[in-house]
Length: 612
Image (spheres, rainbow, N blue to C red):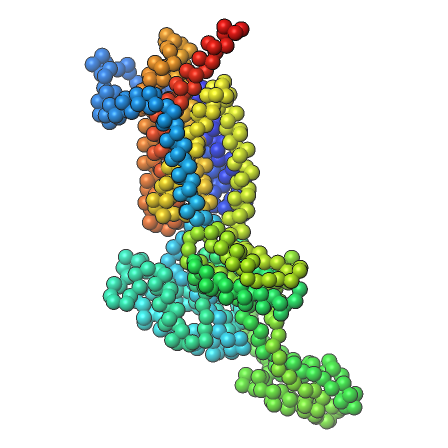
């Protein structure tokens, strides 16, 4: 009786996860294992249902006693039937009105969807803050370290909820993430928010804590700027686009002066845009540099080569290795160079002695002149294209809406010469790529699902009726996101994909049972109206059971607050909200649509018979 719809229903649920398997990049790494696990579990459950369950049922279950025939009219199911019967009667009496109301709800829901906003993945609370610190170019390592130590101490004194801090400055022995001495990453760890002090002036939210930390740090040293993120989030963004921010604005062209000018204009525009938390240049400006111009005529007169002079300058400023000190199995190099205090002094550099001949010495000033200039360092490229970039962190969760507004503002105010272009990257680029991929794969999967429903029912008309369950299930998911103030994300999209399978399963089982009652597969054939009423009441319990099991199973995810809960909540919220509307529409809209369409089809057939 139920083998055919069960098999096709399970096949449909497995098929709806195929789009998830097509995801690439970070979103694929996150959700492909889930889709694979669900599909394997569904296949295993199907095998269990058709093999072990019938045998166990025949062995363990007994026929109900005569006095237990009416037990299903008691308890929760009985109460549900007493509510459902008059509601079904009204739905069957006014099918067109019910359908128009459902379509109006669907249209209103999509208007609500436009207000949700979009983001790539929900932001996790990592329990830590990363402050990317930028100080004036040319600052020495010692000075930067001293400022950083004072900054950390001031933050810990001001905010007891900060448990500990540490920083990374400069380049490590394994230079996988080199930074100049004027830049560093400051990691700030805080305790659970419920344990934060609640006195006057104390921050109550993470955003207030970040704002307070920035104020304290600027009091220590006013010349430092900050970009705030989270440790994993920062590396995640850097891995995506090479920029440590939610959104990157990259300007491509040949002339670096024009690139810098365009970037400065774009920065000023973005700083005024609502939703911007912070904007910084990817590079810290043009550092000062000392250029040594050699006097070729003087070199010839003194019989000196340019290489000799360059080597002498290099040894004095960068250092020359003159030996080593053994320390166990390790050897530590002995390097000599000018003192730190003299290496930036032009007069000391010009006094650098150069050997002339066998015994003579002359100062560098005899053969060279010094001049100070600012150089572009580094000049960054993407695929050999020279670029400048801005790092933008957002205070809004509507990533897509923010980028659209930013594009419109920059395109209207920043004029670029031919051959120059502006691109937005970071998480927005990943969101855009995932949306494009899903826009191709999801329609293909929906067509295949329709083919399966048609194969199960043998009627395009009935398959279309079952298919109405998908858009009307989506309404509940969208409304649930709106009520909880959550934006649309790839996580929510996975929830909609899972929801569509559940909606199709319930509709398929209901319509197949109604067809069985009409065809006489389960007794005497019944007229359409009677078959619809009995079929809807027969399937009330399994439909409600499916809805309750699925929705209750997602409740812990929907209300979770632990690590990773930010990713789980949108998925669970969509499924729970969608199951509520899907169940109502499956029990009311599908039977009324089926009866109305079949009555009209019967009238059309009867009208055609005399003419034949």
